[in-house]
Image (cartoon, rainbow, N blue to C red):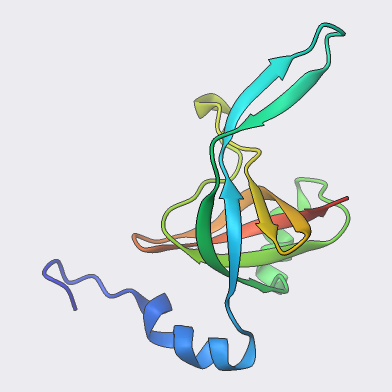
Length: 127
């Protein structure tokens, strides 16, 4: 336990989980809004990427139920990573972050679990 009585459970189990499903280095691009082209088309803009260690896993039944109302289709997964990251929060104008693992791009669609030291995100594979 730290000085404040908070335990990072993810760090405790990280080694055991990583032995079965290894962690992968990825780039996280935070959305910073969009630019509008001369043709009126909105083009997403991103801050410089941050390198993160991520683990991609299937979504659990409860995760799927949580996402059910969002009408998410396609290949969706759970991404576990250290730090605090957000899904779409429209009033705060947050969302649309991209997680790039190897050559696969994942759109961050929702935060499923938010802890002081780590986050579980729902991500959708992009074509």
